[in-house]
Amino acid sequence: MDKAKVVEIKDLGITYHTIEEETEALRDVNLDIYHNEIIGVVGPSGCGKSTLLSIIAGLIKPTKGSVRVNGRLVDKPLNNVGYMFQSDQLFEWRNILNNVLLGLEIQGKLDDEAKERAKEMLHSYGLGDFIYSYPYQLSGGMRQRVALIRTLILEPDLLLLDEPFSALDYQTRLAISDEIGTILKKEEKTAIMVTHDISEAISMSDRVVVLSQRPGTIKKIFDIKLSCNKERTPLKSREAPEFRQYFNEIWRELDIHV
Amino acid sequence: MSNKSISKSHQEYLSAIKRRKRSILIAQIGILILTLVLWEVAANFRWIDPFIVSSPSRIVKLFIEYATNGNLHKHVFVSLMETIVGFAAGTILGLIIAIGLWWSEYWARVIDPYIVVLNSLPKTALAPIIIIWVGAGYSGIIVTAISVSIVVTIMNMYNSFISTDPNKIKLLKTFGASKPQILKKLVLPASIPNLIGTLKISIGLSWVGVIIGEFLVSKAGIGYLIVYGSQVFKLDIVMMGVVILAIICALMYKIIASIEKHFIKWIE
Image (cartoon, rainbow over all chains, first blue to last red):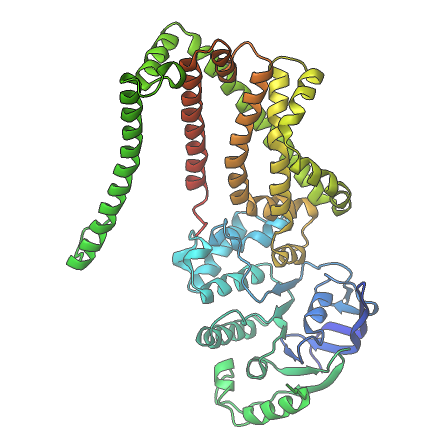
């Protein structure tokens, strides 16, 4: 591939200790992710999907192996990695603008220019009327959009999305995932998205990684190639003829028995 | 509110709510007036002995007497000063200790049993010791007030700090936040509602400490007034002291409640 390598995950493994037992959560995970790629990670619950994200984010130290982002070893949270959560995690006591500025404030990068940029972004994402509103005055979809802007304003090279839409109702979820997927492509971002929603993974990702039961290892990687007319967006992806086929293959790979 | 095009049914709905509010207020004031009138009448007709239970008119008369000769100001001022200083010091000290415990989980664990014992101990039992140690003046009374209110402040605030949403902490960590930043940007502001709830409790407890302290040693203050009244068997003075105390406490509670209303518009 001629594109720049953003993430390099090498022989990654992690073992947890609790008083009752020792749990091997991830084993021998190897994955390279390239610029402007969106990677979907699916797997049975408890397979270590979220642990994988936390390791890449520098929040947890792996037991074995390493993660590099743009060549730099991840041993603590890096400023060029953004993280989005299941729920928006907006601070109720801050207005929307100040919520967006939170990360810049923490990193000591807050100045008038940054404030202007935040306002511009809020305007361009349809939140111009809510700059001085408080989170409780916004709908769930709008709040998640604020959370995205809060992440994007730090201009991360890599975005980690931890089931970012699972707290939303289905309609909002489709609309927001379409919007955010389009934004990520437009801004040429690289992203890793953990999800339990196979359709969401296929519709948004360039590649879908299937993890096995614990200890989580990479079972299979699907290159998602969909024939969409014109531009590919998450919503249009769902209409592509190959969509169903990917869905069935991934479903089979997940091997879920209830 | 805009008065454009409110439908009739909505108008009726609104006025029904208003009527109900007014009726509750009238009932509240009614109970107060009824009690006062009944008390006065009962004392007047000697159904009850006014020497023991006093009466509203005697209290008012005494109040005017005390207010004009300047004694009342002195007593109220002394108690108020002791309470406010004790309350402020107790809150600040309690907050600092709670932050310390949040900072070091190890020490929080170590100190836990002591806090539990201190919490269940009636702090008023410590008042005589404190007054002997610290001194039989304002300082002894203030320290008593602190000792009564501080444990609740520590426990409430520590519990509030440790129940901060772990995902929000994780969010700040992904930004690379340090522990002081997490405290300042998240843990403290998230605990403001709990802080105000705690203030409402600890202001009352500070009064308990002050009154106990004044019972034990004092030359002035509302607690002194009450004890003095009972010792010389002048129940008018005792009753007046209690009424004044009730009014001041209610006012202080109201002040904190109004701070709450203005301060936190984001609580839904």
